[in-house]
Amino acid sequence: MSTPLTRQYDALKQQVPDALLFFRLGDFYTLFFEDATLARRELAITLNKEHGRAGIPMLSIPYKSADAAIARLLQKGHRVAVCDQAKDHAPEAMRERPRSVQKLHLLTKGEG
Image (cartoon, rainbow, N blue to C red; front, side):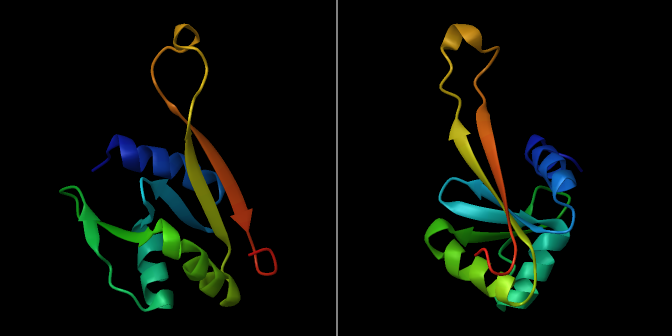
């Protein structure tokens, strides 16, 4: 089952297929699918939710705890991509519809 959120995540994940993708949703960074399962195992935390009816694995990490979680994953040799959302501040007349701008940063050991 595909949702607008998982399609957006999938599109970003294609840009960084070999990294764990931390996707900013409000006050949390969320990982989906295999990234959620792997991060749960590496961080020894509980997989907290499943997204939608399809039961997609989902792991949410509070924004304030993300740096520590990312540092642990980097220390274990994983690559981490962080996607932050920012509002599009273009004048309303120049936009077709409200949207967010995505900033994607790739981190590897030594850069965390």
